[in-house]
Picture 1 (tube, helix red, strand yellow):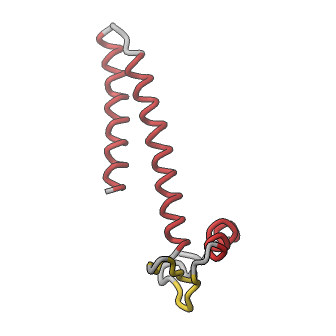
Picture 2 (picture 1 turned 180 degrees about the vertical axis):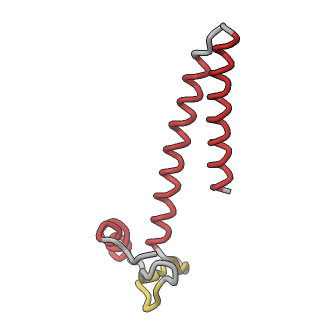
Picture 3 (picture 1 turned 90 degrees about the horizontal axis):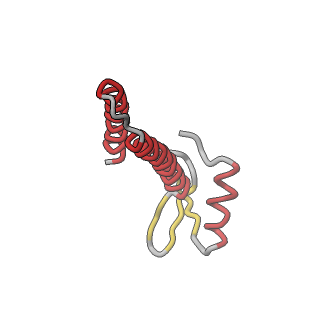
Length: 105
């Protein structure tokens, strides 16, 4: 993994420094960013920021899938053959949602 980007320096590291966090003389073994200490906790702000961004992306995808599942559910046809197609789509959406849940936990 690479070190902090300009965006991460501007949006994560600089505000952290301005908030009184202490930049340590050690670096994150994962991304190479300087480690910080605040309120007795030593952490890598870049890795935390990236993890948060990744979770937001997953949450966005899950939200889209849930919305689509509701749309399909609300438009179920009465014809059994057509309904079968809709149910297969719903099953696939649910399978993808389960896979996302496995990735999170």
